Image (tube, rainbow, N blue to C red; front, side, top):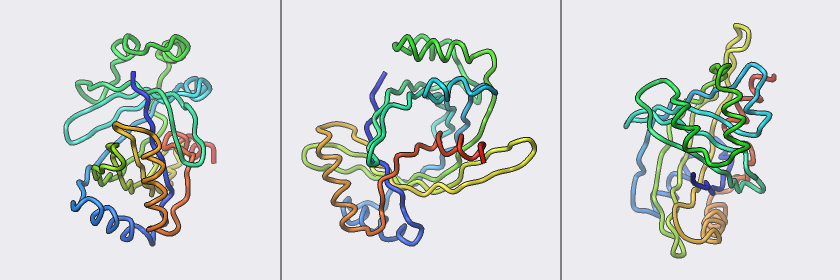
Length: 208
């Protein structure tokens, strides 16, 4: 288990080029674009959502990953949550391995209860452009995510945009993460803290 700590900022469409230029200038790198396709699962009764957790399969250029996250806490764009992630053979969940890795009994119980009835609820498809930054002794992964949330509800196709900056602390002190976010917001007007995860966007899209 790891604890994911990241700051998420909503990015206005007209500021994408400004944010990109800032990261390029800050790192000396054009950034690495990665296409990510994600499938989120829950039961028809939303067992996982009620337990404040999310289950995802992700296809990356290197293969498939399954990830189980708790909602954790989110305030002023700062997200902190437990996360269990591991590679899988293909486009199928491997729940036994995930249950063995999950060391939070309450969270594992929710996943075990949901397992027989899991269905695909929605997808998120986006391009993530990545930069690695050093800041105040910390290592931070910065990303611009641009794409869509996609859901099919009773035969109706629904779609909502994804456009955000994520700053994830890889090592070092959390204060460096906040300092970098402050520096970025001074240089890219219009960025605003975003407490809504991509999973939450998917659930909200289905509820519309």
